[in-house]
Every structure is written in C-alpha cells, then in structure tokens.
Length: 161
Image 1 (cartoon, rainbow, N blue to C red):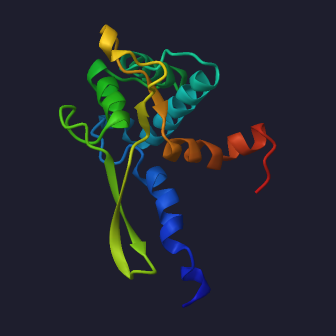
Image 2: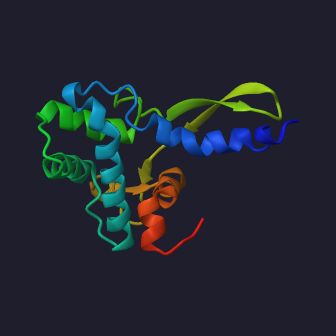
Image 3: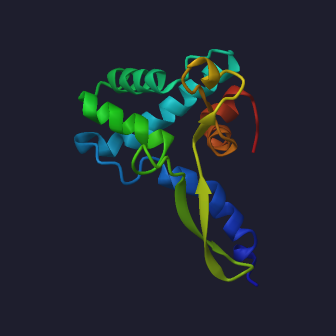
C-alpha cells in the first residue's frame, strides 16, 4: 500500500469534526461565518471548563453565540442564534438529539464507514437533573482535540508539532 494511505482513515476521523462544524445549518447571511462563530463558542466553553465555571447550560451557550456574533460585528436575530446554539448540541431536531455523522474511508477495510460524534456532552459533575436543574455541557474529546489542534492553543501552551 502506498505510504500516503497509511493511517488515512484515522486522519479523516480527526478532521471530520472540523469539516462538519456548522455544515448544513440554515443561518442566512451568517453562513460564511458559522465555523468561526462555533469555534469561538467551543473555546469559550473550554475556558469555562478550565476555570470550573458551570455557566455552560444551553441558555449560556446561546449567550456565548450572541456575544461572539456581537464581537465579530455581525448581526443575527433570535431565530439564527437559537439555530446556531442547537446546531452545536445536536444534529437535526431537538427531540431526537442525534449525534453528528460523517463518512470516512477506511483504508484497511477498503470501505466507507460512518463516524458519529458530538461536540459537547453532559458534564455529570455539574448537572443535577434530580434536583430540577438543567444540563451543564462540557466539551467531548473530539471537541477538545479540535481546540488542541488549533494553532492558537499550540502557541498558548508552547506545544510544538
């Protein structure tokens, strides 16, 4: 097998969450900016996790979206901000809460496989549903890897690749 195929499927599995971030979201004129907005929201969640800040509920994420849009000097209505917020939490309709899916080519099996993943998941340490609380979210390993793969984090933590 050609050396360029070695580990090809694993590479795509690492990149698929980046490729899929915001894909397919109907957000009007925000479409060209959706990945940037969502990456900023993921970074905000990441830093709140690091600082043990439990302001990571759906309403908090919607505020992060709103704040990011405002900071980037973009305009959005409430419907667009709600769509962006929901589009980070799950794929499709809220009642189904489906994970995201992406195809990748597995060079070993020589077949197309489906990868499922989420960007955020319930933070069991801070969520107390029994007491009537709402879900506090944290980044999944997939989203954390996206953060660590980004140049900004590599420079910030003095990691060389």
